[in-house]
Length: 303
Length: 85
Image (cartoon, rainbow over all chains, first blue to last red; front, side):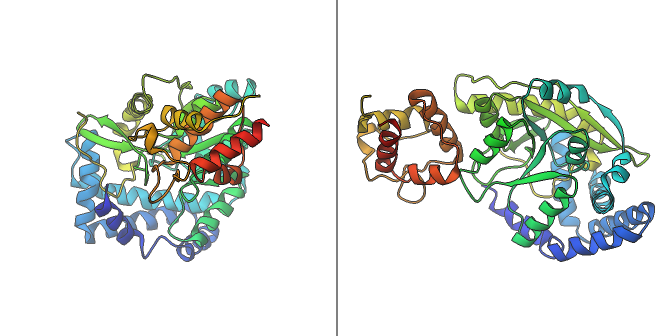
């Protein structure tokens, strides 16, 4: 499915989504005050939205899955907020962890992580493309947990390596998936060794998908990884990281979910995907402008 | 220890993977992944790995091992028998 989505995605990022642009962003972030960097990136995002109304329309349709009343203005804001998020990403990545960490002003539910860690288990930490999800890795590592992020291959290997190096500065590993169908064995090994492995679930996967119902439509989650959590006997822990109006971040860690097999594989994935979507929904509705979904998500409704 | 028969491998595949073929269509030369194969995906691979561990007590921990064992029905058959011998 979603060939048009892939096509749009490719156009969308072809000029910007490459290692040299990330180098430029990191270079700016080294000497520019965060407030100025954020304002500049926010304005660039809004300008981009202004000259690309067709892309804003896609974002609006995605937002309408959550709330039919969200309009074009909110969709344009998504681009402005995404610019600010990139500014924060480069800023914190070019600072020592102790200097970067205070950008997270509020952490709720950290006890869930500590409890699982105390049991000697790892966990699959699932989040979505909202807020600055990469900050979750910093929080995990700085809290003393082994942390790794799952990633699909970036458009170029140089960008994949760039982002892996960036995470490594915070002592967060990277496990690339997608090119090797047996990469789940590497993930299983990390989980068995007690690592918290972070992954994004709110976009379609190139090969396996599970439909979830949002209030105004259906979209796809890449949830196959839940089966791995069940196999490794580790929980799935939903988590979010959104920027508050004062510019600081609010991390929320939700209670762990232990995946139990249901009547079929598809039903197991559907049931737990919906559970995760229902947990995310209030956060997304409170901060729709931070849901960074730039390709069409909607899919035919569940039958 | 009893050796594993081809029918056991067929049953293993049918029990753990989303297949739309009859047991007779699963031949020793049938590949598991890619074109002209059973068309397994990464989730099938995971389920198959779990199924092998549950049924035969053989754990696969390295991607390289999985690539070798899961090439075709025959390679899986032979690999499993080697692990149990």
